[in-house]
Image (cartoon, rainbow, N blue to C red):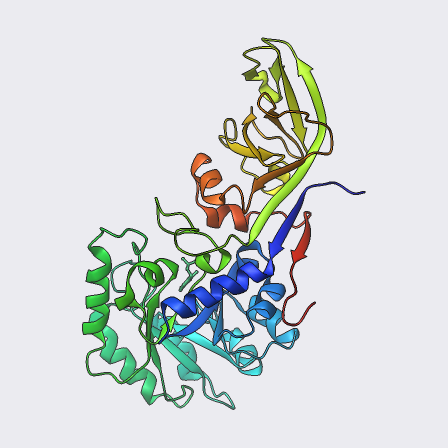
Length: 365
Ligand SMILES: *Cc1c(COP(=O)(O)O)cnc(C)c1O
């Protein structure tokens, strides 16, 4: 028996959420976003489970290379495009699509003489002010790209939404309007929707949607649970109790001796900590499940362990199961308690954790 801390990835749930995207945006093609090791879910297992995706979105060449080396043939889009001209030969070799968001990338393309022209997505900054050309430059850049022999015909247009997770924020409609006007008269396929756009803004769906978070079963919308949105959590972080102790009122628990027992009580020690990616910051009071019963963490998580309040758990013993987040305890709740977002928790999962898959992927690893 090895350390009980582990991550469980529910592959049928992943497939269910992907089908949910299809259901919600039936006229759009899907770029399944699998950057950052598929938000901590495992790049290859995720891509194999989502073999039906019209394309995969990744953040860099290394992620794309992992997919191609595993014989994954779906189109792949580098969401931030090439970072330098030295990447271009590999982009050709792996047949990757690129985002062009800056003049420096146009300069790279001007000097390139690839055997096959690059498939390009032109990114417009419709108001988020992260990546993309100013809307007024759309036509200039479009024409420039069209004139390059290194760029394939069929250039597409994309933008990114800053506040799509806020149903009452007028910024999304403004961004969509800016994006629409910027591309007026340009014949091209378009993309703007991330998960929140897919779920809340049908007018953002356009030709291609780019779901990340929702495919992993997480709600991007505050106050709306993933269940309410018809999504199923894919990742759960589980472990078990490795010690149960009876303490006296006033006894302290953990580093810093910052937590005191308010009465005589039992405390459990769970094999999971910040060394696994569990947030140390404000872990005290965080909800956690022991034997499927909700309780809370006492004191700060340490590297490999954390302590839990066992007052309301009957017949508890070493070896009893613990869920830190997952199907029974939404990661959204844990993230909110820790002052962060589910994205950060999932991406922070440490590689040392054992990972188990539930359900078969279409092409098992
Ligand atoms: C990460 C990313 C997405 C996916 O966003 P979610 O909020 O996870 O759905 C979509 N588009 C781009 C350009 C991204 O970088």
